[in-house]
Image (cartoon, rainbow, N blue to C red):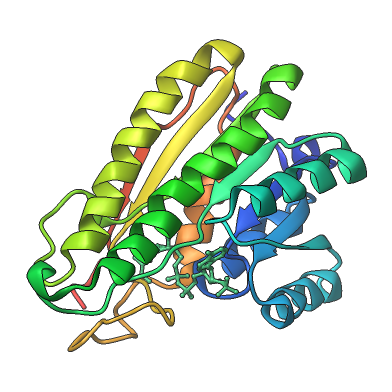
Length: 242
Ligand SMILES: NC(=O)c1ccc[n+]([C@@H]2O[C@H](COP(=O)([O-])OP(=O)(O)OC[C@H]3O[C@@H](n4cnc5c(N)ncnc54)[C@H](OP(=O)(O)O)[C@@H]3O)[C@@H](O)[C@H]2O)c1
C-alpha cells in the first residue's frame, strides 16, 4: 500500500484555523472534498460562512467555529465543541497567521510585535495544547503547521514575521518528537509567496506566485501518507520566480 485512500479519510475530522479565506479556505475545501468533516475556525463569522457554503455546495461537510487563536479560552471552547459534536480530532491544521507591516524592526511598535507573535506562534501553541490530548487519547492524529520560507531565510523589513515562523519551525520539530510515540505526526509546510490577501508582495507577479490550492495539495499529500511514516517538513516554491 502506498498511502491512505480517500475512502479511509471518510469520517475523519479536521480543524483548520484561518479557514475564512486564502490558504486556510483552500485547505478546508480540499479536505472536505476528500470526505473529511471540517471545522472552520477564524474570527470573522461571515468569512467562515463563505467557506462553509462553498464546501456544502460541493457536497462536503463543514462546521463553523468562531475562534481567536490568541485567546486560550476561545481555543479551548472550540476543542470542547469538536469533542462534543464529533468526539474526535484527526487532523489539526494551524494555518491562521498575520503578516507584519513592512519596515525595519527598530521602527516596529511593541503592539505589532505582539500581534505577530501571539497569532503566528502562541496561537499554534494554544491549538496544540487544546487538541493534542484528544489525539493522545485516540492514539493517532496529524498536526500540520503552515509556516513559510520566511522561517528558513532572512526577511529584511519583515523580521518579526520571520522570527515567528523560525520559531514555529522549531516548535514543530520539537513537538513532533514529543508526540510521535503516541502515533501523532507533526508536519510543517513552508511555502514561498502565495497569492492571497496576506502581504506585502510588492513587485511580484500574482500569476507566477503559488496559489492557495498548491498549499492545499501539499496538505492532502501529507494526510494521505501511510500512518507508519510522516513527512516532517516541506519547502514549497513556485516553479517560475515571481
Ligand atoms: N500568503 C503568503 O505569501 C504566505 C506564504 C507563506 C506562508 N503563509 C502563511 O499561510 C497562512 C495563511 O495565510 P494566507 O496567505 O492565507 O493569509 P490570509 O488570507 O490573510 O488568511 C489568514 C487567516 O488567518 C486568520 N486569522 C488571523 N488572525 C487570527 C486569529 N487571531 N485567530 C483566528 N484566525 C486568525 C484570518 O481570519 P480572521 O481575520 O477572520 O480571523 C484569515 O482567515 C499564514 O500562517 C501565513 O503566515 C502565507
